[in-house]
Image (cartoon, rainbow, N blue to C red):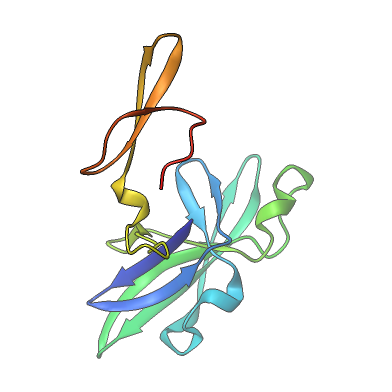
Length: 137
């Protein structure tokens, strides 16, 4: 899945390799528009992840202090987010609807938890319901 972070009408990061922890998507450093980020002097401590450092965002002359944080040297329990960046303070992080070759997006796929004859049902928006595991053209 691809995630996109936006603030003040601009895309500030986009990646299909984020890590989700505690409800936050952590973006790889190379997915950031680095020209929009300035290191901040702010640091906070998470009991299990370690010490976080922050960035201030500047987009079209507007600043958003400490809107992004990362763990440069996380604890052993949080190594998977080393250097990855997460957001708050009005930054929107949303999943991007990815187009398939047939033009449909992931949002077109609907999975129903209810069973039909012991099998979950799956449908594409505007298509027929079919048992899970059956190929849908």
